[in-house]
Length: 640
Picture 1 (cartoon, rainbow, N blue to C red):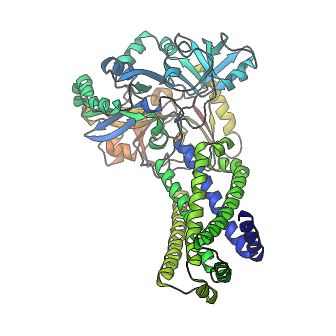
Picture 2 (tube, helix red, strand yellow; picture 1 turned 120 degrees about the vertical axis):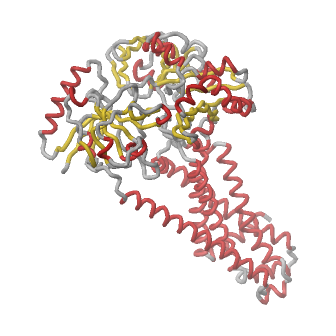
């Protein structure tokens, strides 16, 4: 019977080449597109799901409120919160601290090899006990226990030590610190919210900071610069522990917070939810977006539904042509079940062929797709249980949904009626019209969505951002060991660049547009005001060329002049900051001093609001503080 089914299918295919080509190509394109979207969605949802204790690992987020409204979220909180929770709550089994120590890059050396490394964090000793990043060399209980020890990735180990064993060898950091390699871990997979190539022991950071600063940080809940993760006894302990947090904060900081007219709360974030549901300024790594994943999932479903409806419509449209075949088969004794099996078989072979072709296209185009979505999608994901299960479900639903109706339509009538031509029925007409309507609705929705996206992109491209960035080249500055020499060298370097034709400005700053501002100042206010007037502001340190580099509009006051004696304690604010500080006239805020980071810079200018990040981000209050010793970024600007 199977051989007979194949023979009939082959004859029908050869006889209706155009129909076969149209139907098969439609299915192949839709399945390929749907699977590409599915693989991306699966990858986005898989972040940090490989940790064995994923259901019990939570990151501590620190939320701040001013006048009862949420003013700032920090995913990096107080340094002591992990040990505090471990001491006071039995739900917490262990914790881990992580910190970047305010430095974005380091110079590491081993013998004649020297590299600038940017992905390095300090981590406490239980890191490898909580997270499932396997150590290929070393002991997870000892790797980060002692001061000045480091665990490095396999890639870093090869970069510095080649094929030799790195354990016990010493890496020099910034020419002053000596770290013993006590562990080598497997390179991090992409589907994690972490990004680091090496972990210094947290005990090392305490040695670097010194006992006085360490003690201040360990007793101050107002300083937020340490990432903290806790492992709970059970995933169900999260709700009970979260419910105790407000009373815990009130007991520890209630009086002080009420004086500031502020409040704080600690939120337990499941580690598996961070990538899609957390996108704050101080994230370790850029995260994804849960809404985008949902929309893409709906898009994949819509594409598959359109292709299936198209198949059904084409199949039923050919029902008259195949009517004689069905009638003759019934005359010769075929039952309705046998005819249904034949049509299901033809549909299965058709769908299987389309799926195989789509799978081949998937493998061939996956590298290009990875580049397009800026993700490393390994070919192994195609053979994962989730992918194979999804393909099987898509195949099964496709076979049943696109074959069962045509099979029933063409097999349920009597032979004489079928040979004379299929009669039209009200139910059949209604169903066909419904399917066509659904197809048009799905297609129209996709076209409308495409137009909306196009409009949004056009809006983002054409809306003025308030700054000039077309001819700006941004370069990371060097790591500085001798700051006075650096300032002198940079001044000479800057002057030589400005002598080149077309060069307009060369400046320095701690942050660049397009990236979230790293430095956040809390409780900023006009000097003399009570702490209840304080709010959170973004702080950028820059030299006198910052405004000219980006073409920022100065609407009141003046720019920095660059003279240390006059400008070292001065600031420029944007319009949002001006209004938040209590002024509506930019001229009236000039000369006032603001309390920020323990200093009192004088406001010498006000700039027009500009979009430091994308247009979907509300313009925040920004304070630009003069600083000639910045080493983070160079800006080279050409006007030609």
